[in-house]
Image (cartoon, rainbow, N blue to C red):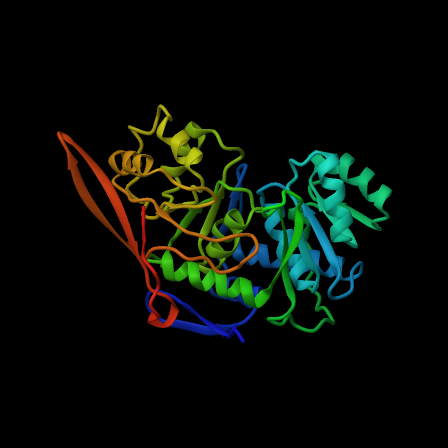
Length: 364
């Protein structure tokens, strides 16, 4: 049986053991209350404010769901997504993460499969979600940004909830994956499995400063975007800068002034787009240190172009929606092979598992 009570390791010390995502959240709120947790569309929220907002929304949700019932999140990458997700966990619900860009024809079957007690959505998807909820008999729809506003949640007086604390075996998220069939299926992940995933990522991409700044790109409803944009920044007590959309010049404009240290990146198309940005050459990216990749095979040529443009290596992680922990390199060795006058780089990635267990090496 997998051991789920794990230590959160920092640069200088070992923190208290954690076994649930609620533990990680509470630890971040307690240890970095004044640190900015989230920035989006000109709004900044500290960990203290995030904690208050999550607690307030959790109290409201607890009157709608009983422990173990599903709450569907049909939300874009936003402050509201993060508050909704952790509020659902605090209410002991199972958050089902659904892409808000899905049309009704795709969203309907997923909601039917998840059978949520409530759906949390954004103003842009309110009409579609409300109609589907009516057709499927879903009792409650909450539109964040209209029915519930973050600033009101932060200002709400604190009141205790009469719920037990989450356990490692409680459901922490439901993702939807087509797998090899193309038919989306709900994939259940417990708190314990997702804590293990976070621990694995910390081993591959260790925190090195006390002021990590993350800029995620991939949607939080995808396992890669969820881990690199939601859970890993929280575990690092870092700041997360959320772009309004993926537009290469806009991304570069955010990387420099916010002193981003961890660029979420993701699939090759994201890195290729940023490389094509007209303002990349003049940008000061001296704070940037980690550039992970995932979600699709990565061409070596594109890795080399990124290295030449930024001086940084791209490191791939491997995982699936169906599994929580990921694997990835902890060291990169570049081997130059000469073909006439052209040098081509081959990358060998060597890694080691948790507890210094041996891990296999992959060569591209």
